[in-house]
Image (cartoon, rainbow, N blue to C red):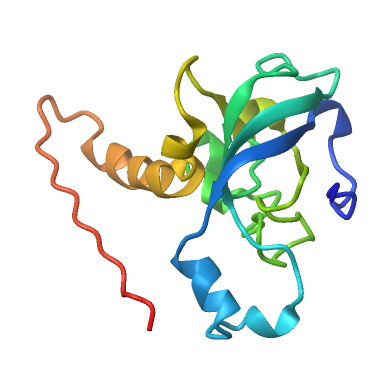
Amino acid sequence: MDCALVPPGPVREAGHHRPLAATTCDLDHHVIDDKTPFSGFGPFPIGHECVGTVVEAGPDCTDVAVGDVVGVAWHIACGTCAQCELGHTARCLRHGDAQYGLPVNGAWGGTFDELIRVPYADFNLAKLPAGVDPVHLASIGDNLALGWETVMPTVAGITDPKIAVFGCTRGRT
């Protein structure tokens, strides 16, 4: 399914991306299990974590090209507003809480779709090194990125930071 439902945007900077490996997170499971305020808005495509291949790039895309294997940011961010410039991309002033897999600030589709449109592709896609198995990095745009966004501003300027990362999730019943 092509995500043609995406609101009009910077088409020249957009890219179409075919997911190769997608994964779910706790939020997806809670939506499916009818445990969130979003559950009642369905049906809608789910998923906001994936790695895929660029199948089309707008003429203003300079960092990604057709055939590139990329990780996709879980949220929609412009990359140029004050919050994005500070590295707070999940708080983008142009797109708020918009993300793939939930009907928040637009119908952006989900990473289990056959194709997804990625606005601001140069900003929202990260090329993966050759030879990396996409399955191993399916959560790069969410869990790994959120960890980075949470830790790095805190330790910025510390010469030799010591970092401990703890995390867990509740099991599904």
